[in-house]
Amino acid sequence: MITHINTLTFNGIEVKKVDLQAQISSGLPNFIIVGLPDKSIAESKERIRSAIQSIGLQLPPKRIIINLSPADLMKEGSHFDLPIALAILAVMGIVPKDKIKSYMVMGELGLDGAILPVNGVLPASVQAKNDNLGIICPQNCGSEAAWAKVDNIIAAPNLLSLINHLKESELLPYPQPTEYISQISSLDMSEVKGQETAKRALEVAAAGGHNLLMVGPPGSGKSMLASRLTTILPPMTIDEAIETSMIKSIAGQINENGICFSRPFQAPHHSASTPALVGGGRKGTPGEISLAHNGVLFLDELPEFNRTTLEALRQPLENGEIQISRVNAHTTFPANFQLIAAMNPCRCGHLGQKDKECTRAPICAQEYMSKISGPLLDRIDIKIEVPQVSPWELSEVKKGESSKVIQSRVIKARELQINRLRQLNITDINTNSQLKGKILEEICIMDNEAEKLLITFAEKNLMSARAYHRTLRLARTIADLQNESKILKLHIAEALSYRQSRYF
Image 1 (tube, rainbow, N blue to C red):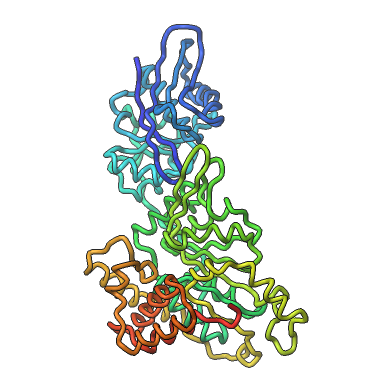
Image 2: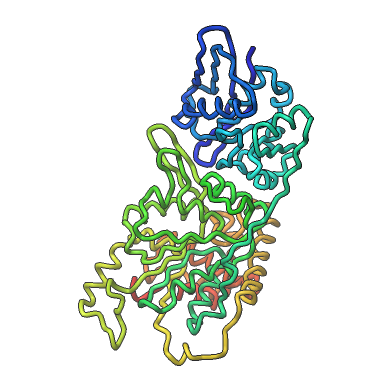
């Protein structure tokens, strides 16, 4: 007799369904798992044996074969423990075989029969809902699964309670979705003294989802400004929060088993390797750019990053995803993030300062700036200088605008963009930074003076087609912040001022 259980494995963040088959037949006692299992699955035999013994049962002294189909797909993860155990118990007649066919099953087993938390419950639940299945998962992951709105969720603390629930002798409660509150909300833009130009640039970047680069001496407030960008961004929608949390679930970074509606803010150290930033590795783990999906990726000391690592950002900055090609697998990770970068004007950081002038200028600056390639800079919409704040500004008692005030303007601008796109039946993009091709031409309509200014500037400064279109998108965002239907000359002028810098 053969029992079938629905379970899964992951290729990046993509869910691959696995048909787990169990058979107990006569022959010499043996426990075999086939179907390209990894070491953690091969070791599950001892965990399963001990877990079943902990509830007063014994594996039959027969030949037990577990097949993971499709056989040519590599299977990884300790979440196969529970489906293997349930399949064996079904063959033994302990649990009803007909009931478990309608569930997707995942969970790790402890030696005492406890069902331990595993990664990837949220994307597994979304897949289960799409396949009209329920899900059986660890109790600690129940609230995570509940966000997918699966009709039937069994979140069990241990193997015995799961068996009792399936036999309807003791029913488990239905889990409720929980929300995780991020601590980053304690930051506020009003704490930043001076830097009004930089604040305006951050507002424009937030309104249109544009990439931004800040150049300035050490201690001028670049990191402080960047860390407060998420406080002026609109809260994530439910769909965005679930999409972002699915990535975090695969990476094992779901906080308190709840969904967070604050935009992610990832700030990797400049020593981060290419796989750490873009993702990959043996198990296809999401990188920092995927963890920043629908949020902000902050790269401080930009030229200190490995050049190869920085060049890997080109594709996701254009397409909103990263494709990792390996010998055994091709994996695609979502990476629709907003890049915020900061750097000093030269290695010592004092270029252009009167009292601390760089002693190796201009060679020091040239060597430092040359670490960032032209094509990467071309993909950054806004480049601003962040000068040193004067003592008079630091001693100012009066505070600037709060994040809440700026956020209200950003939300209105975003609503304009979304409504405009929905009127054109465009549902796959939400911000001006994502406009391309025919849609860009339809939406970014300029008056005659604005068009003349942009063409003249582009011709004189030999702007690339990418730079031209990015300037147009930026001007569209500035116009949206002022609730203007057309792009005017002053909007183009401000957009061009953000594209130019004395350092590049």
